[in-house]
Length: 116
Image (tube, rainbow, N blue to C red; front, side, top):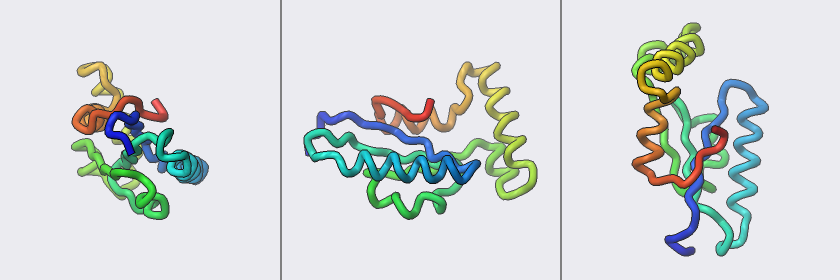
């Protein structure tokens, strides 16, 4: 496979079962493209990747990213609220809803991230 091929980052949608299934199907579809058309695939997961173990081997890379609020409130009843607060504050201060994701996406040099 060519090193000049496109690099797509896919954010693992893990808050609803339909999002998990959608992410699985997208990774599967992209991985089945002919080598000449297949992009490099990086799967970005918030906090953990166990919901995506089934397709992780089809991706070129799997990266787990955390905000500081994720670390504090992970696996509590406040985790979704903490993610929303983090996104709101980060957007106001940094003009970036998910700075942790943006940082690792830049480091990985992805050409596009889906979903945006």
